[in-house]
Amino acid sequence: MTVNLVPGSLLKTLPGSYYSDPEIFALEQARIFEAMWICAVRSADVGTPGAFRTVRVGRESVLVTRNRTGEARAFFNVCRHRGARLCTEPAGEVRRAFQCSYHAWTYDLDGRLVAAPNLTKMPDVDRVEYGLRRVHVREWLGYVWVCLAGEAPSFEDTVMGAVRTRLGDIESIEAYAVDRLEFGRRITYDVRANWKLIVENFMECYHCATIHPELTEVLPEFADGFAAQFFVGHGALFGDDVKGFTVDGSEGFERIPGVTAEQDRRYYAVTIRPQVFVNLVPDHVILHRMFPVAPDRTIVECDWLYLPEVVAAGRDLTKSVELFHRVNQQDFEACERCQEATNSRVYAEGGVLVPSEHHLAEFHTWVLDALEEG
Ligand code: FES
Ligand code: FE
Image 1 (cartoon, helix red, strand yellow):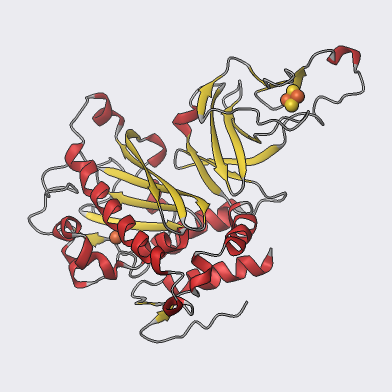
Image 2: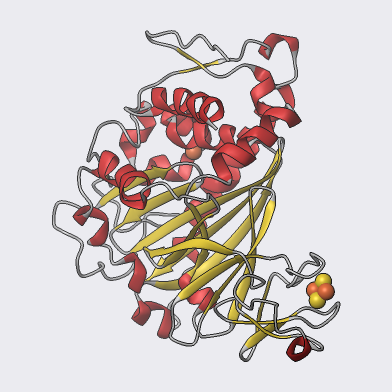
């Protein structure tokens, strides 16, 4: 695969087929989504032993849960007997084991086969060997991250490395104590667009002036086509008369205690390839996770996270959530309009981006390298 990435004012996107071809999509699923660290669920979604979620990672269903000692665990959601889907619900809770509804093979929260009809009469059946197939797990930023690869890439180099590259260091994100924040709101978007169009859009702030009127009111530098991720460590400053990161610039909530004076009144956007966007503002954090399901369809889960006391007090989050909800709707609608045209002969060689952001140029070479290396 050779793709011409022209240096200069304009940067070529990938050819149109990369956004619509099922074969390329299958390759991406295998070599990117099933090979890298994927942000699967919020830790609080599996907050207690036996609470579980099932998530789609690449072409696989993954069962994420917590064992009796409180450690996150993830397994391929496939029964080791005849391969039936073990958990068919997106979320739920078991007391101490998962039981397959086909022939009742039963697995404990660490995945060991603990019971099956006549198991005692089959002493040669190893309970670990026939246990659920484990998936690599890490918890960071209050999320459970999983990796389906046999040998996982370094979490520190890839996931944390992306944050370091963008913000300059890890302390800058730790200041927001994302793992101690609580859910204010989650909105799931079913976006009829290729996941890469969503990444390109997130990293090219060139569109902010035209499609994000509310956002540019709050962050006036975006109205100049200035970029959200312009240089390492850059955070966009709130407008002078803006009181908070809300849909009308009205007061937000108390500043997260660790946020520094330098970070105050600023918005920072971070892209963690392949499927996470983190948005940091002084009083909350907005985190997007993308789950591609087809070349032209991506499920995006977006969480708005607040200080526990803000959520516990039942404070009105409407104006706070509404700002980025509108941004999401505006962005995804734009991505869907691009998706419609990716099959056009005019887009066969791709389009161009205006790469004002420091790492946009790397994205396409990263995708191509990942597809070639697998
Ligand atoms: Fe699960 Fe038989 S397929 S117990
Ligand atoms: Fe946008």
